[in-house]
Length: 327
Image (cartoon, rainbow, N blue to C red; front, side):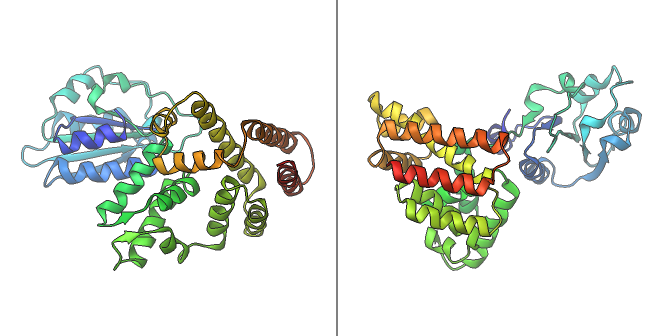
């Protein structure tokens, strides 16, 4: 079950007695835990453990002898660190018998190399929830929902900016959403102009840079990149953004040439309609050959980043100047 299916199950009041939250998106995992606590029981005793500090014998009494009156909500964080040995054979039976207990194992959040969860086969299928990184379309849906929860409407351009800039850090993204909603407390509609009144120089430069590339305005792009450098943005990060943008353009161009409509391209690439519009607008400014040549230049620069001692900033500026000169 993924994040969206889990949320739907809560709305339907379909609960599992035991859950295994697994994946790298720690913020979403914590958000899901809060939502589950709100709807599972009206009142409960809360018990929390850390997997590296307990063994199964510490947990068993809570499962074998739950309170006669009332409910209990048990959370085991860092569950991947629970020792594999001495897993009780009756554990699966105990899991199924729980009526006034909700047990949540939280595992592998922010782990570079996720550990195998030896007891996962004992968790009922409806209790296993995976918190993987959002695809672009899912992230934009999530952003829109967060603003709707606060009684706000957000325009497509603002969603595009937030999903592009904060795609790697949901925690920072939610902070930005909170900040905007506090600042614009008297506004129902959130537009990019509202964001520009709040953005830091690096955030404005990022938006300017990305938009300038799509509009083929390399003078503006160079201006944006200077600000990004001055604000401490790593050249490798900027290059990765460029490569991702050109890869999207290549894929959109291939589908467009094959006769796909904008709606079909959106479905194929899993992108927001606003992003597809941006890409199709960019295709009127770049030929397929130009996009491919730019992509190869960027890949070559990426290789130089990794295999030479040349200054990454100089390499990045050079490739932008080359692109601007060629087209």
